[in-house]
Length: 417
Image 1 (cartoon, helix red, strand yellow):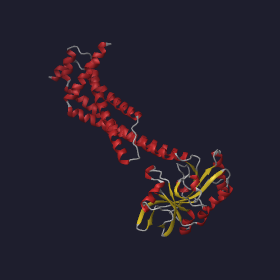
Image 2: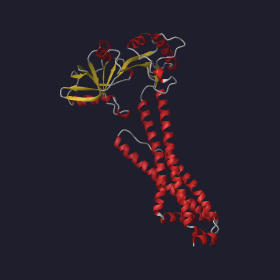
Image 3: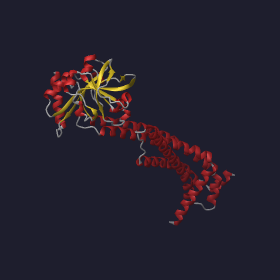
Image 4: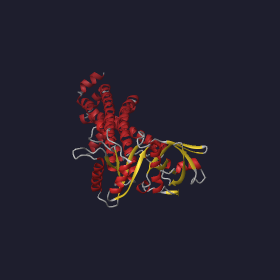
């Protein structure tokens, strides 16, 4: 056992000395593996971070909440050309569901519109997310108002010119002034500020209710009508607590089909979305990204492996004389083989370590610059990075090492002279 350990130690020392004596060659060999490991682990870390951020952003939302619209949260088997012909959900459908849908806690009609600029005297805030919604949105989203109030059913139905703004909007427009009762301009009209939402912080990709403003959906319908091609309507529905959600969805689907007069052989021309569908969609996207990134990284790592193999072949040729002398002095084949195999593996492992360190440094720097977004370098990703770099080193070094161990000592000394 001690003899084997000594052989391993001597082989390792020979490999280290060989690498020290050829610094430029060592650096170039390291570079290929470093780039490969950096590519693989960098992509995996970015995908893991993005997936965690997205799922973290939606984890606080109620999975039972249902979104009725003409678009799907995830992939659909229905051809795109057919989906493009689906009609938008309507305000009348919202009213119909409010009257007829059992076990429904609340439903809200929402318009997804383009960002706008809100003005107050000489102050203005651009790119504000305007959220035209009915009054019941307050209960569905469980909003919290820290100043004033949310608009009521009468104001919602009448389309009153009232507005509830996010914390950041209130601070930008009014500063230390109490915003309640102040008039702001939006859509060329005056709106009265009646409430300020509680600060919630930045969400996914920077979106947040802090930078949003909510107004009654009916005032937008008054201004632009129901055929505004730039507004994408949806009905958000929340079942009562403890409801059988699949059964609720089935009932909802049948209600909408009945309202639209669809025949039994006709497909649904709408989508009943839940957050689980969006989560599955994100899983598919991140899985595909991981595969593509892994393929690109493995290709880079393979190129690095070819670089190590090439360097090892050159090293065997240059050290043919030394190999012959070692074998003439009694060195065993396994000693020669391990010597060159260690050299290849050490190159690959150090290249992998440098790649991991670069990913770690860049992830820390990126997390610092982006603030709320945290880049993750998981232990499993580090393990697989080192595993693949070690495997590439073994594969790249095994044949040159075998060739070196097979050399005849007399021929090796004569060739090297």
